[in-house]
Structure formats: C-alpha cells, structure tokens
View 1: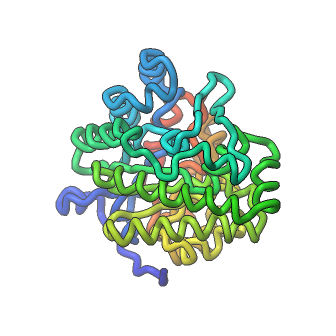
View 2: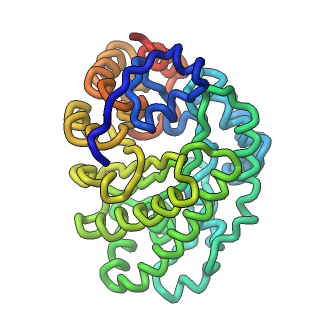
Length: 358
C-alpha cells in the first residue's frame, strides 16, 4: 500500500454522511477523534456478562446461543459507547466445526483432542461443517439489526497458524514443542492442515460477512512463537491467501490482521498479506509504529491491558503517548491485547473519555 493521503475529518461530518468512524479510519482517513473499541471488550470483567455466562452453562454453549451471544456482543457497546461491536465467539469454533473435540475448562482454558500427524488428520472433516456454526451467523445477523448507524460490526477468525497451534498442542502451551516438531518432521503433512484451515477460515469469514459483519479481523495470536522462516511460510502466506479471497468477493470489507508478538515481522506484513489495517501489540513503541507502519497502512492499537487495569495517571499518560504518536494518520484506538478479566469497569469508561478528548 502506498503512502496515504491524510484527511482531517470532523466528528460532525460523520453524522452528516452517515459513515461509521471505524470504517473511515480503515479506509485511510485521519480523524480528529479516533474511533475506539477493545479486544475482549465483551467478557468476564462485566457483571452483566457473568450473569449470561452462568445462564448458558458453559462457554461454548454461550457462543452457540444466538440470543445470549448477541446480548453479550452488545453489552460493552451499550455500556461504554464503543465505535464497534465485535462478535462474541471464539477462534476455536473452526476446529470444532472441522470435527475436533473442543471444550473449555473453567480456570484452565481450551482443551482439544490433539492432532499431531498426517494420520491424525483423518479424524477431521475434509471441509468445515458450516451448519455447525449457523448459530454464530444468526448472532451476527441479530447484532447487525440492533446496532446504531454509527457503530460498526466486526467479525473475526483465528489465522491458520494460531488455530493450528491450539489443534496440535491440545490447548495453549509454554513451548509449543509439538507444532514446531511437526513443521520440521513432516512439513508437507502439516501443510495439509494449514490448507484445510485456509479453506475453513475463508468460508467462516464469508458467512459472517454475508450475515452482516462490516469488518473482519484475523487473530494471529501466536505469531511470536514462529521463527523467521516459519513466520513467512505459515503466518504470512495463509493470511495472504485468505485476504485475497475475502477481498475478491467483498472488496469493500476491510480486513485487519493482528500478528501479535511479530516484532520486526510487522515490517512489510501489510504489503505482503494485502490486509487493509494492522492491529499492533503493546510491545511496539507508538512512535516507531507511526514511522515504520502507519505510513503504509491504518493502525489499530496499542495500549497495554495491564495499564488499563491499573488506570489512573499511568493510563492517562499512556493514552496521551499513543494518541500523540498515532493520531496523525488513520488510526483506531484499541489495546495491544485483550481486556483482562479483573479490569475495573470505571477504568474502561475513563479510557473512552480520555481517547475522545481533543
């Protein structure tokens, strides 16, 4: 993407043109007040979420209950006035719809029946069973029908490398030894899994967009565990294929990527993958992001969730630093990872206030 022409846009113009602030930023516009939403903005830090979570019985039940999932998706928008709602779901619904056993254990996170060889791939479906995910697309449709004209709806999926990491490790991991071993022992076998995930992820995003998602984000949560060669082969190339396919069918739908922990891998990532915007993690200095990334692509990020948890002057100073560096170009304020469960809600409300101060 070439250096973008910057346009100063007044917030009042938004209501006149009925264009959503989030979409304007992802289309390359600089705005006086940046739009804001937060990764994991719907979650355990909200008392209203915890009520619905208990009502659903377990996490996956909540993801697959359209009425409850729609309420959860809307809760943070209604409470804080965010500029976007992001579908309440999980990246692991894709392996679930490929036939892998997936469950969430309270206090321990996801548990999957591990897939660790070419032979194990026979335990999966050849193609994703989208009918298993139809409740999720119903959730998207319900949310789209309830949002105000200024609030955008974000769909999402995990990028293939990250989803594969969970599938191969059987959950989260400290060392990710099994996925690293497979990529070296049998790269052609591992590529079959990645290709299956490329097809499944693309189909999942198509369905979300058809149901009403206006933006989609690919979460590459484990980009940081990949070596430089693995990053190019297993992170960059699959996202490039998915993005190309989404843009061919839905050219007006922005695609965001979040290669968390990619470090210098962020450089050239947008150009290599074709994504419309980059979400950056909190390890990157905002001034460096402005100089090296934002000249090529709209940026989303990158407050440390721990700073949001602490609040006070630390949060005020961090917001000022981020806005000073990044609000000179197309920018969406977000975290550099997700909201922590113990985050006080008044800190989130204060964050929104600070971001919207001129």
